[in-house]
Structure formats: C-alpha cells, structure tokens
Image 1 (cartoon, rainbow, N blue to C red):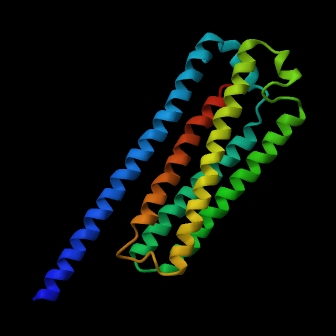
Image 2 (image 1 turned 90 degrees about the vertical axis):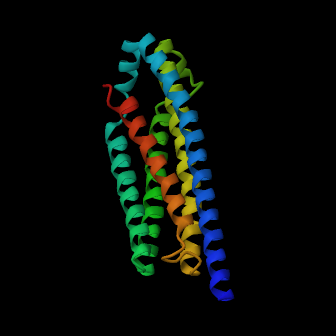
Length: 209
C-alpha cells in the first residue's frame, strides 16, 4: 500500500514537472515570436515606404536558394514529428534515425545559406559595402534587414542543431523513453518555430520580385 502511494506521488510529481517545463517552453517561444515580430514590423514599415526599391533589391535575390532551404526545413520539421511519434510507439531506433535526419537537414540548411551569403558577398552585397551604399536607401534597408533577419534565424537553426544533438545523445543513452519524452517534444516545438519563422522570411525576401 505504501509502495503504491509512493509511486502515485512520484508520478504526480513528474507530471507537474512536465507541465511546468511545457509552460516554460511556450513562454520562451512567445518571447522569440515577439523578437522576430518586431523585426517583421520594421520590415513592413520600410517596405511601404520604399516599395519600388524593395522590389528592385529583391530582383537580386536567388529564389532557387530560398526554395531549396524551404524544402530542407519543411522536411526536417517532418522528420522531427516522426521522431516523436516513433518514441511514443516505443521504437527508439526510428526515433534516433529521425532526430539524426533532422540534424542533417539543419546542417544542410546552414551550408546552403553559407553558399548563398558567399555569393552575395562576392558580388559586394553586404551591410556597409561600397556597392550597397551606392544604391538607394530602400535597397540598403532591404539588404540590411535581409542579413540581420536571416542571420538571426541561422543562429536559431544552429542552436536548434545543438539542442537536437543533446536529444540524440539522450535517446542513445535511454534517457528519453516512450513514457518520458518531454525533452524531445519541447525540442520539437523549438524546431517547428524555427521552420515557421523561415516560412515568413521566404516570401518577404524572395517572392516580392
């Protein structure tokens, strides 16, 4: 009887801890949305102020890079969902495989973004460059916002990769199991936020041509 009461108390304690962690991650995600939301507002204000110059600047963007990165992140979001579904079904191997796949897609995104940035920098298009400063104020603001917002997003992707690497280690060490996967679930929420932010960035910078 005493053993059952102890088990019930432990289960209740774990449940409360899990709920607390989930509330914490949602608050964190809300703060991230506020951060990017502020930048989206700044973008919107300047886009209405310089519509023609924003359109002209967007003509220099490589839509192929943006499209490929969109597909990469959406696929990574899918593998993240499949990882959580696999651990719920007690299939640790598949969960490990899908988390590793998500990490791979995250790295692929960063590599693709690095190549894209390198091409732009090679053409002299980067904040403070002589080539950029010769353009109109709207074009300068467009590229300043582009590098700032995609750079901040890339940082979040990098952080997500680190977090998911820890989740992969936890899975390998059996610290994430079918009845205790809150860490993996919260990591998935963060990763989905990163994907959603890119879904907004993609049309703002690549599809206004």
